[in-house]
Length: 331
Image 1: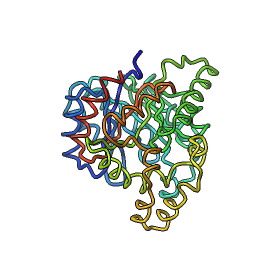
Image 2 (image 1 turned 135 degrees about the horizontal axis):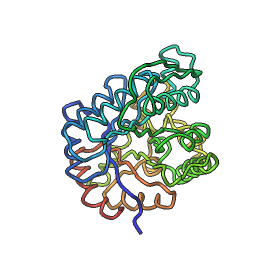
Image 3 (image 1 turned 60 degrees about the vertical axis):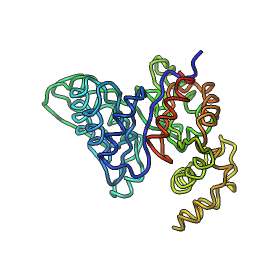
Image 4 (image 1 turned 90 degrees about the horizontal axis):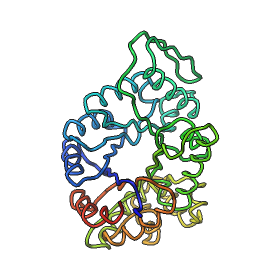
């Protein structure tokens, strides 16, 4: 029996627009099933997805993630439908609350209500003309024609209430890099989605589940592990929720030095505090065989699609090693 239904890929680090387009073409050539595009404060995941779709013919492209606090759900619905039309339905809207934006933009909206409203508007615009909706966070009155084709919407979730919303509404679950590293958390998240789906009368088998893994692959396993420390010390470890740490069996004092230095602004000290043991706990890092051995364990969680979020040491080489030495043994 195969471990997973498919394997996706993404590229972290300072990957410029033109290079991402080249990496998208490489990902398709290497037969990855999907490419996931991150959104930050300096680049638009929707625009990057459009460029990646234009440069490819078959691979599915999704955002991981974008937020209705950046774009009103009406705009998200129109842009998603446009990308699906231009790509023969190869685009997936990966949606998430991105709660820090609420504070950054001085908004008063509540994440759960905002995401619920977003689903209602996107689905409503795809189901009828002259759509009207009055929500708690977002509302809409429009006389435009029904949007086509139907847009797949996946939802990034960590906490129990957002996981319930996946089971109730979404086409797929996106498990963040701050959660998917843990076998126990991944199993918990998927079971929570399945439980809610059954409760509301949905078929859980129709809901996809993707887990994003911080990935660093090299024939020199030590080089890959040392390279992974930068992203772990500056993003993953400091921002992993306590609930995930608890389920993963990682004591808070094991990451306390990393977190303290990071939030005090001493980034290099935070990176220096990432031990080899923490690398093994939080990342797929090492030789292809080492990464493959770890990923095999996640077959028991119910995860359908691991996404190798590659940081390096060299994006192209790591992607090629994964495609040649890992993917054939996973699907």
